[in-house]
Image 1 (spheres, rainbow, N blue to C red):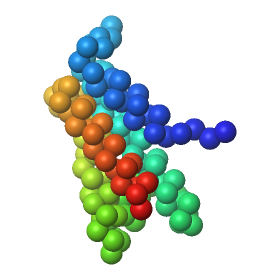
Image 2 (image 1 turned 90 degrees about the vertical axis):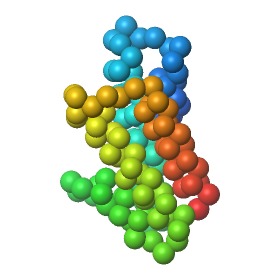
Image 3 (image 1 turned 45 degrees about the vertical axis):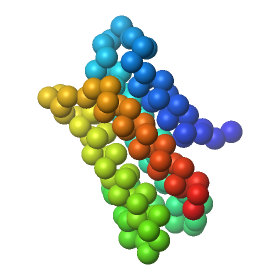
Image 4 (image 1 turned 60 degrees about the vertical axis):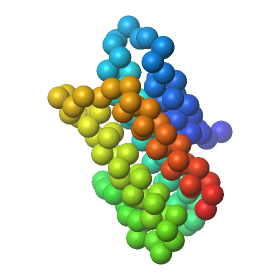
Length: 124
């Protein structure tokens, strides 16, 4: 059985609830939510491309996935690529920038954006 990447989205959404305190502090929770939301969308997009027969591999897999969608003539696919790139930027801040303020609103926005990306992929 293969892992359903959309489970990361459900996890991100549960972390994005204000009334769900964790012992490690809210910012850690929100950073994790942004990261998991991105990976739910990224893996769903990557899986879609593989199912379409594209073989993507290497160091820049994230850029490859984004660019495959962005370089399409289909406006829906371009939107998916643009949104995925935007979400990736939020994930990079959450995962690597200690000075970046990652708050509840950021986590909720990331979850909503990931959900829209995944729905867009399923609608293709």
